[in-house]
Image 1 (cartoon, one colour):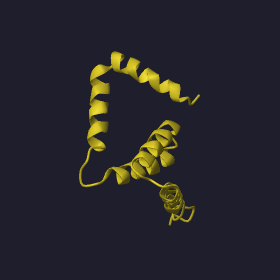
Image 2: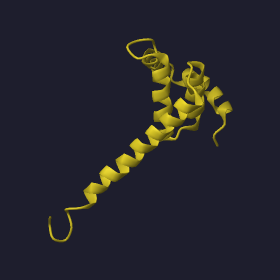
Image 3: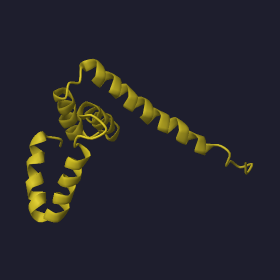
Image 4: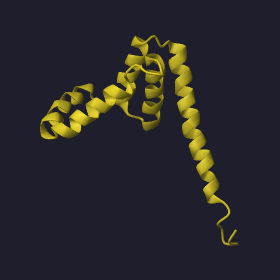
Length: 106
């Protein structure tokens, strides 16, 4: 199902919904434009988000972009663990909603 060749269909989406796709590409370009955060940090953040959303396309594209921006294997490994910790932390903290609303009404 996940094949990088599928991304060639983005052009068709642009033909079918040009204003929406144009807006998306402008937003994407603006988000990754130089600013207060450097390119490497933005790409490492993108890798972390891609890992938590589990998008194989984004993982591949942003890992490559991070490497192109100078990311090392150590940096990519650490950012993967940060993403995993945040995802696990979300599960643990959301688990607190299971308590205090039992049969005793607490």
